[in-house]
Image 1 (cartoon, rainbow over the protein chains, first blue to last red):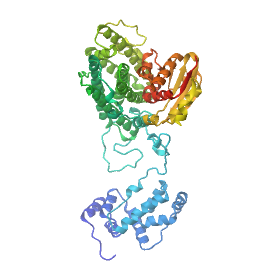
Image 2 (image 1 turned 30 degrees about the horizontal axis):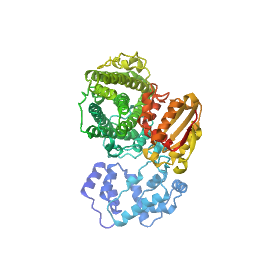
Image 3 (image 1 turned 90 degrees about the horizontal axis):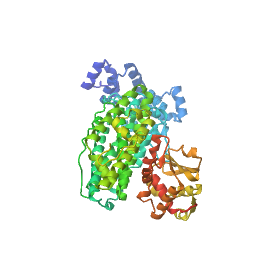
Image 4 (image 1 turned 180 degrees about the vertical axis):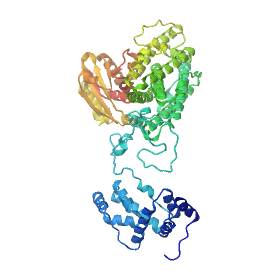
Length: 478
Length: 151
């Protein structure tokens, strides 16, 4: 051996703390392994017996000894069509036979393994920098291949083999993507949603693709040059509606952002879909703000925001989701229907039509998630009913206390401020609201809550489809 | 291709009319640019007792078929109206190259007390809104058909 190798002080300290023999450390250094790698292996709990066996083999092979390939490795190599020489090169490059076996079992092709070996060989020939290539030994599933379909290579199509196994409980508190190998150095990230039933919707990956594919751009999709101003009271009423849409969109976008960081990484389909939903609302804020400013009126009066408060204050994702993506989207769809119906230019109609497309997609998530949740947690049915009661009650309070939005809709629907116009506006608003409540209840029925029709908050019952037609008078709905 | 189909003449309602529309849309880059559309749409021309099923898949119209009324109602949603309503909508599209505001699917739906788009399921019906621009594009393409309406 000649002169005894000096062990760096910090490495000796690690070996001492772990009771790891110093002669093995010297042998590893003599073979050219970097001190940082040796220290990492000792810290990770490397067993002296195994290390000694590995070093024996490496010393023998590097002295010109033959590499012995165990029969089970030979068999695997034949199955994977690896030449024996590739295995021998791998061992000469510093890989243990167990590592080679792991690569075989993980499905690595011969050409892929050759790249691993070449990297090892180059690192050794260069004499540094230290390369461990331990990451190449990640025991994830190899050999999975996905072919693009009619829609290209979609996120959902990747869910095959072990990657298609989406567990009911996600055990990782770290940022580990599903399907990756865990890294013991990763810290817990403090997510709070680890249970599939709490956020899942079977079509989340499809909704994500749909959102990406059907994306539109307010700046260029809307023919802004071709939206003439409406007669003054109508333009002002439309801007009031736009103001409401902006405020609502910002609150929902905020709320989605707040919950995204609570969702663990096991359910990335929902996380990425929610990222698009947040972006949808950013786009809505953008397009309605632009429309409000287009013809010189600008923002109208702020909404009190009572109704949006319980959405922001929700303590469970299913609570937030049900309020946002069933009650609120149904209401926003109603507003867009009024906006579309009263549009007097192609541009105005397009703004509301495109917004409705996004809202309907979000409703699809809300309904499907609630259905999934209730099927797995039927004991929570009354709790969900309570969420609905709360959001309906807060909506009723705001709608009753602050007539701003209602009156703006009436002016738009009636076509002006005259007595007959307002009368017609109230009548039409009543019709649109009946449609809204019917759609809202129908979506809840699809989610598995047909009984909500019976318990609908009393204020909203005035718009129940079977409810007796109320007498419509100017200035009120009752 | 589009030019050839543009000369097409077909009777509405008929399977041939829908097949021509399918071919037109599938060769139209504008339809693809709207984005993926995955839904089934029933067509009911009530007083003629004619029913069709249109299947949209990814970036194309995958299939059109003449079906029974029950099959049309198995779609995600169906568009239902008398012949006169369909005729007025399609003649408006022909006259303007696309539906004017009073004759879009959305407006017709909002005007009808029971809705133009109907379904047995509150979630599946929302496909009408989710893919509305694609559906409107589909019908707007009929402006290039020389449609014959048989009274």
